[in-house]
Length: 417
Image (cartoon, rainbow, N blue to C red; front, side):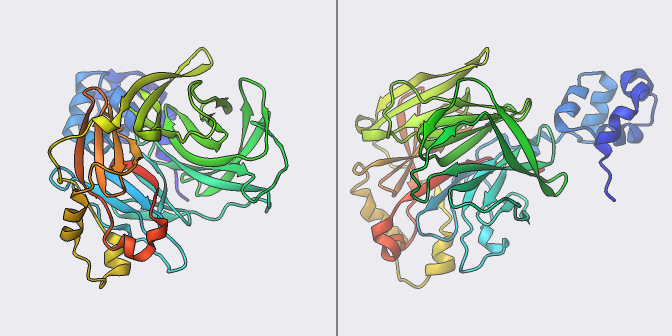
């Protein structure tokens, strides 16, 4: 039977309450005790006394370099492709081995990213993967009643500062199959199925509505989600609301969209420098809102607005590369010249629609795609557009030209813990 040593730490009361007593222990024994702390607690322990800090530093117990503190690249799901593509800058970011090399897959099933949180990826068919370490695991199938009306989407929650364990939340949505039945949303309470890597199984967890009364709706389609400060923010795009699920007190609340948005406006949810953000790029106009929460209230405040059509950069950057795993695994042999295709696309680089790829997790930067061909970085504080590189998959238009699209994108922060 496995034992969780971290859970036994509070049973050493006198030693932990008396740093001077611990300082009398041999360094190796003290290091063995401290290494059982979670990273956040270990960071706090460094401030207790010089002896503790010296032991932590000497034994490299707090590996900050292993935490997800930098942007690695962007995983992009192109419609109709089997694997997610990885778009990154090789000069500053170590290459990530294609997940098609080591994650099991079958021609019947796709292995695209469906959720990302602090370096861990959740793939279709419930595979959890750490690309930085090539670790993977498949989750057991959750036990839930079959329903023609209700479907589920899984979201990953992982905070290596708090724990090395992760959780997966199975969130319901309905109306996808053409039902006209009406629902109270959000309901007064909801039981979610949650997978915990600590126990290795699914469990039911009750959440209670907090805030305004529910509305009557006929469908609720899920989209993206972000984890921020012990809460999971899930965006429904019919209607345009964000559901805040608190992991601390078991409550959830519906957050209405910004008052200056349209009912059918496409909004993208993300996390960046100042917290939880929303973005809209309709008609080449970029708008950004930031979520402000205080005293149990939540409100989207306008943060940036820009007309992208008049902010073009003269120099073409091409430092970022697309991994192109679908071409080399599935479509090789088409005789496509990638460099020639890139040169042809340069003539149309200032044409076509913008697609939103995501927020930079640590800087005031958003990532965009122009005509599916070019990756862009828009710097919010300086209002400048930076061309990152050619991001169009080789042979993509030869395979599924009528369905070209980017369905999802996930800015990726590598974690080597």
